[in-house]
Structures are given as C-alpha cells and as structure tokens.
Image (cartoon, rainbow over all chains, first blue to last red; front, side, top):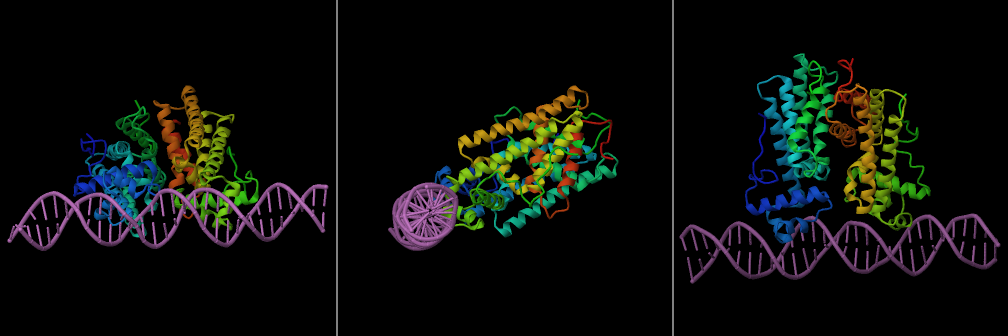
Length: 213
Length: 213
DNA sequence: ACGCTCTCTAAGCGCTTGCTCAGCTTCGTT
DNA sequence: AACGAAGCTGAGCAAGCGCTTAGAGAGCGT
C-alpha cells in the first residue's frame, strides 16, 4: 500500500550493490562505527576490526576513509530520493502522495536509523567535491517534496502560505527521526511513519477538520 | 511580547557568566570551532589559536577538552530550558503559550545556531556522567512541552491523540533548525519562529480552521 | 608445473593528537 | 623592595592517527 518496500533481510539496508563481499563487510562495519561514534571519532582500525580484517585490507577496496563515507552517503541519498520519487509519481491526490512520501521516508529513517544518521549528519566530513555532489541530491529531495505541496495548493487540497518554508520544515521533521529514533523505544517505524504522515497533513492544512480519528 | 529576550550584544550568546575573561574567550572559540568542524575534528591547538593563546593556556582554565564541551552544553541547555519554562508559566491559554514557546525556542536556535549546533548534536561526545546530566535536562525540556500540550487537550483547545509523540515531533522540528539555519539565507530568525509557531499550532489541531491568514 | 592476479597481513612511517611541565612575566600585598 | 600567587608560553612526551609497503597465500588459465 505504500511507495517503498524494504528488503526483508537483516536489520540494516540492502548493500547488495556493493560487490566484493569483503568491500561490503567493510562498508557495513563503517556504517555502524560512524553511526555510533561519528566519522571523525572512528578509526580505520576500528572499521577493519569490525569487519574481521587487518587495517591494511581497507585500502585494497577504498582509497581513503573519506571514500567510504562518500559511498555510504551516496547510496543512502539515492535510496531516500527513490522513496520520495516513488510516492510523488503515484496516481493519487496530493494529500495521498504527500502522506505516502512522509510515511515511507520516515519509516526508512527509523528502520535504517544507523545508516540515516551517517547519511544525514556527516555531510560536513566529506571533501568539497563529494559534498557538492551530495548537496545536489538534497536539492532534488527538497524539490520533490515542494512539488507535491505546490500541487496540493494548486488543487485546493492544501492551505499553505509558504510552500518552500513548509517543505523545509517537513523534511527537517522527517530527517530528525534518524537522530532520536531508538529501536528499543516505545514506537515501531510503522507507528512513527503513521503519526508523522498525519502531522504533516495537518501542517499543510489538509482535510475538513481532524484528520486524526 | 514574547517569553525570552536575547542580550542585545554581539552575534553570539551571553557567556557573561563565564568569569575569567580568558576562560570566556576560550569557550567562545571552542563553540565556533565545534560548530564548524565538530568536537572530534577540533584540536585544542585550534581552540587556543582562535582565542589568541598558546595550547597550554587552555589547561589552566579547563581540565580537559571534554570539560569545555560540557560547560558549553550545560549553559546552552539551561538557557533553552529557561526559554521554554518562561513560556509555560505565562498567564494565557495553552495555544498562546505553546506558540510562544515554539517561537522563542526556534528563534534562539536560529539566532545562536552555532551554539545550538554544539549543544544539540555533540551530546555523544560527552563522558558518561556529563552526558547523563545533560540527558536529564532534555527530559525536563520534553516534559515542559508535553505539559503545555496536555493542558491544551484537557481544555479542549487542542485535538491530539498522542501527546508524547506529538511532543517529540514538535521539539525535533525546533531543534533541527540549528542544523539547517543559515544567517545568510532568506529567512530571519523571527520569520522562522513565526512560521514554526503556526505549523505547530496546526500540528496540535488548534483553531476552527486555517490559523494561517 | 608455472606464473599471474587478487586478497590479505605484519610491520611500521611520518605526523598529529591531547596534554604536561619548567620557567618567565605580571600582579597585589606587605 | 621583597614575595608568593596567578596567567601564560615554548618545548616536548607518549599515544594514536591515516595510510604504505613488502611479502605471503590462494585460485586460475595455460
């Protein structure tokens, strides 16, 4: 019923596209380490150790520690953008598409909160060129959500005075889920997604009154 | 008209309470450096350099680099909590108090976004005891907002099914301002505060319809 | 059987890190 | 004038950092 489905596999994301198995193990180890301690506080020895390898093995698959972060960031942003675009392109009203976008975007940030934390909060650790590339992806993310909101306004579904400002707020709300979400907390990713979809519809002034039942 | 006023002074916060002038200079330098590059990527040499001192001078006023972060974090959280409590204790309806809380809280996060960035995003760099102390302050922050929302629900002003969940979302929205706000961007802290206060009132289902004019 | 490639390790290089310490200056007090 | 305390510096230590290199072992086509 929703725009994006997750791989049914383990706790973390579908890194299947990372092809030599050893490279994937290193990347998953890096995601965990970066999410726990932050990029700068993580040592290459720690990453290699988690992957069950010697520190030197890392440099066979990645040129630098920064390249590891870039690969993680790129894949994560691609996935996030794909989720939003799938929701945007559905055949439905703006409200349905916005709710779906928020629901699946939030669910991804909760379910893969370790990955999302790295993707969303370690942008400044990237080098200038890599950062510019990722910033461009974020601009597209922003534009996608803004488009849905503006279409809802044009269709008379939404009541929004400042569409770009509301877009920033909506995305900010969703992204911050990666910071506070705890898998051992009270709420499941699905519940947070449902709650947030409802809150966002309220923010854009959708519905005759009381979207919440 | 609002709960909290800033010191009219410079761009950054009122660090007047930090008493030896050299210690204050070091602390302000540390805030700037931590906000720009993050705690772990900042060297004590950089902090001392920004304050116009030798690296050794830092250790006359602070035992460790981590103590510097703790002082910053403590003062910042105290200020943030003070802002919310001032709004809570006003004599007004829940909607006015919630809007005021969000407006001044957001304005503080935008105006002092360098400080806020350190305060809100470098929590994990603190040692265990210091972190526990700050986490307790955050719990009180959360409780303050939750109280206002629950009072609004009890008074029939708000329509909220999940008050704790909505509280998390509201605070998350406000805090994330520190991450994306840019003083050279389109919006002033006042404008962001006004927009966000409106969005939050919508989130809690306040008003007959269309709070935004 | 051979050499070639690919993957990985043990050892370690050059550098930076948080932090220390002996000693110098600048005070206010006597 | 003498003195102790306080603030600060130049030099530097031990530890840890990202990354490199020489070489070992496994798999493979010929």
